[in-house]
Amino acid sequence: MYDMSRQEQIDRAMCKPGYTWNETLGRCLGAVAVPKENPEVPPQPPTPDEAIQQEIASRESTGEVA
Image (cartoon, rainbow, N blue to C red; front, side, top):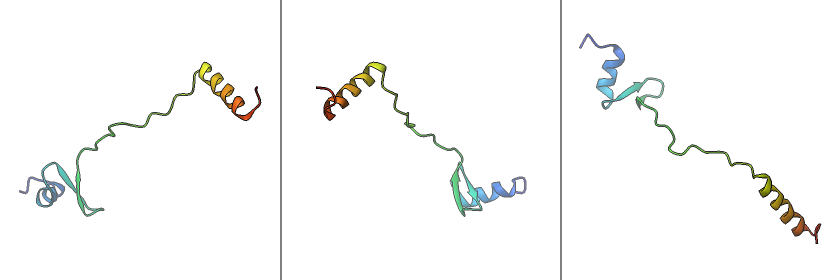
C-alpha cells in the first residue's frame, strides 16, 4: 500500500475504478471527458441564386415590385 501515491490511495478508497477524487469538488470525477455527439454547425449562407430569390420574395411581399 505504501508504493501508491496519496492520490492513488484516495482514489482507491473513495471512487469506482476509472474515477479519480477531486479535492476541490469533494467528489469523484471520470478520467475521460466525453465529446459532444453533434457539435453545432453554423448555418451556411444562401447561394447567390437563393439570395436573389429571397430578395424578390421580400420585395413582392412589401409591394415594392408589382
